[in-house]
Amino acid sequence: MHLNVSVYLRFRIFTIVEYCFLAAFLLIALKSIKIKRIILILSSIFVIISGIDLFTTKADTFDSVPVAIEAILIIIYCIYFLYEQIVTPTPKLIYASADFWVVVALLLYFCGTFFLYIYSQNYLGDSDFNKKYDIINSFFYILKNLILGLAMCVKAETRNSSISHSKRIEQAT
Image (tube, rainbow, N blue to C red; front, side):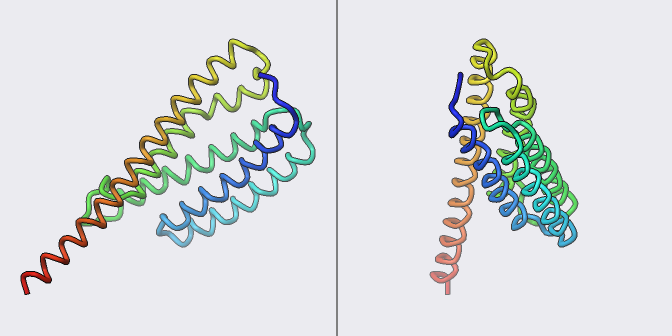
């Protein structure tokens, strides 16, 4: 699996953009202002480190350091989101929220591929590793997307049930 330089450059840029979007989602989903400030600071540090890595590391190598940092940060944010859900009492079940399923999908994906991405920098030239890489990465990618699909269904059901509930109230009056 020998990739050309432009593909690796796109991977590096994708890592930065992906992190920014995921961090923005988690900023919206989290409630704690203090944690949101910490995420903003950590995000700034991540973008700086990734930018430095983008310009200082050989362009024909996998970006395992930024990917590892991204995974660690997203895993921490996801765990804190789940912690917030546990300690904040709500009348709604936690798994009835689309945010919950998105966070679960992210947590499973980044936990499942964390070590894979770390090893990738050194073993990407090995054909046996590439086969295992493809299997593991594809499995967690598909799992993540299935759970994200579930999140979309949960959100749609929540909206439909609230609309039908308001229609029943209107009909009763």
